[in-house]
Length: 407
Image 1: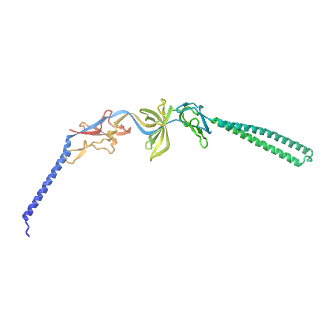
Image 2: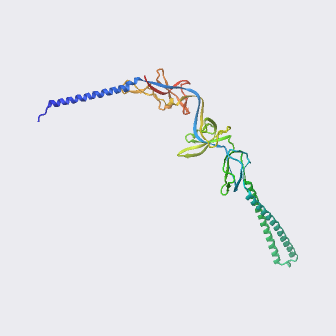
Image 3: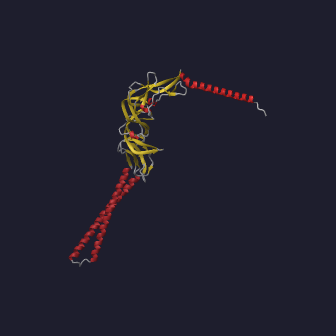
């Protein structure tokens, strides 16, 4: 077999040329892509967004949600059973302490009281009868004793003496029993009079009726527990808001701190109050721990109602005339910029950024590039933060963002 060496060499040379051509094409494509990516950026202009440093009052607050309640609510019930004959107040009615709210039909109670009074008279009569009998028995016993002593025991007989003594003892026991029956009769009369008094329900406080649970003709049974007839709020001119403060914020909440809150009924109206109490007991719901905090609020206009949902803001810190900058300025970092050196990247002004982004701000230098300024960040209200230590002044512009636009 004969191999054509010349043809074989030609084929190898042709393959090398093809590989070289493909490599040149790939390099060209990569070069164009690199130019588009890195050198085309010269057509993009970077603009920095700035905001002025301001001097103003800074309030740090804790947000919480809760519900409005009267300062004092009294549940009015009834201690005796019966049928309601009169209901004299309705929802929202103002009431005074001692005012009659409702009355039961007292027919049965009056009948029971009359029976107790009659039994009292019987007991009194029995007592008088037993007193007379006891006195007679005592006189008879004393008379026999005198005769017995004067006859030196000859008359009457010992048997007669024992009978007289027994008669007196029985009369004395009946007297004691009649006295006890009399006390029992008096107690039954007092109970009947008290039940008759309790058949009329009075308001224990000055206030307003929040709820009415009964109507005329309804039967109430005071067997195991006292039935509720009305709920009365003492004074709606002053209300309290029970808000749930998150465990992460409760350490900053103190008694006496000012509070502002809104309710859904008046979304554009802001109400004010004061922290009255931070309760120690916790509430756990869906794994979230909160602490009930009581806020005292005035309600002289009568706009607030029990049960309304309130979104409260508790002011925990205040700084008057503080130097502040937007929080966006503390979060800003200069963008990465590519230069003409292939695959080389650096920040626009190449500043060394501190580890904590909150302890520096950026201003624009004479060339319009970001320049880092060290500061000490203070309290924040979520929108702006105080600047406690810095060479910056009110009106200085700090960078809050960046915008790129094509030339």
